[in-house]
Length: 168
Image 1 (cartoon, rainbow, N blue to C red):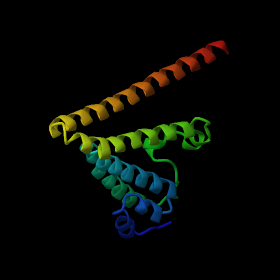
Image 2 (cartoon, rainbow, N blue to C red):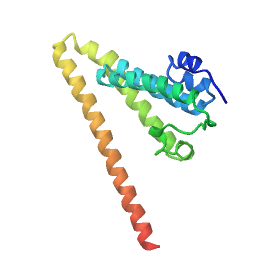
Image 3 (tube, rainbow, N blue to C red):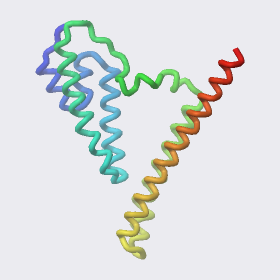
Image 4 (cartoon, rainbow, N blue to C red):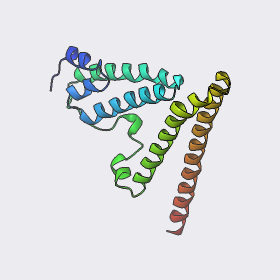
């Protein structure tokens, strides 16, 4: 099906909307999710290094929508390459999904509470620079701890898979 490259480019000004114009709803939602989640995390927790991802996602959205609009083959609405290694439909059916979503909300709520209530109250008594550095250190340590937990859990799953394969 022929789509207008100029229309796809126009809609792609909002990341993901160009893909939706092309009928690629899944890809459009995934791009929007990435873009706006990155924006929210970057602004909410003052993590400016996440901001570097915004233009990358935005330009990917524009150029990919233009490329797909000029494609002569039938477009297939599959996961984006970044999501291909994760089977979200399987993940959403998992019994642990609710638990992980709850952990994310607890973590975000805790960080928001620290940023919006605790730190402004402490700023009356403690130098602002010390508070800022403490906050950055705390958030960095949380990211490191979550990353390490994911790696450890991944190793346990792999060794469990190897044991199952050896028994067969």
